[in-house]
Length: 270
Ligand code: ADP
Image (cartoon, rainbow, N blue to C red; front, side):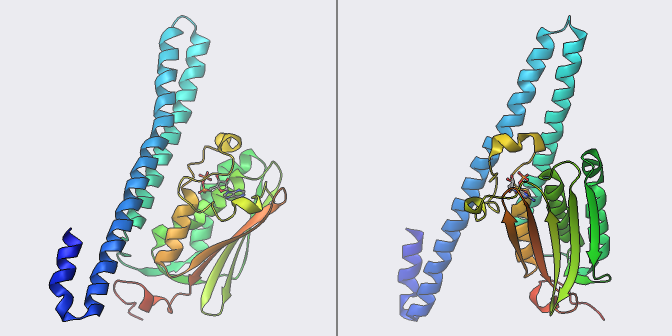
């Protein structure tokens, strides 16, 4: 009703203005629907680890005279609560990005440092599976933007490459300049992604075969975060994959020095 009143009042001012207002309302409604959907998904996803922790707590209670069982349940409770923490962190990260938080103080981000941190973050998981993570390509590349966001995006890609690869395989992270842009590619020799699923993996909470991936402790939010970071920086993310052979995710971002006009916030001073 409010939209109709506004349109009627401004109608004499010209149809273009009316159209803008109507489009605005439509967009508002769409944003609201996405938000509602997100909250519903979040509530659903939180119920799983919370429910598991509750069941395990009951099991500990019942097994109080069996120290070995108590130990086993307690360690599973720890795993589930770590998972819950990771999920909550990713939800916060994604909702900040979705709220279109402007890039507060964009800075020159050194890609080498971002990649090194991402590799470090997954080092333990990689070592546990004897996966060798190799970095190569052009050194000294820069992107103008949020080092925290770009770091989160690259770390998610490297973590996925390690999580969805088998023992003894290789992950290769390559950085290169392509014209006005830089590309970070993360290649793995892992399980790959079925062609029919490829369009869906960037959706929030979407996981290919959640049962098979339960052991990876994934949340289904990592790639949505990558996609949002790419969009905020005026870049994009793409994937090439063959099921059973591996995947390559490529994050493309505008090169440092060229992106300044596309990102809200202070301009670089040099
Ligand atoms: P998750 O936390 O489950 O890894 P993501 O949003 O990061 O969530 O990824 C969504 C889904 O895409 C994953 O559950 C997995 O099925 C698939 N996927 C992502 N990266 C890879 C990869 N490198 N190899 C194979 N499958 C992948």
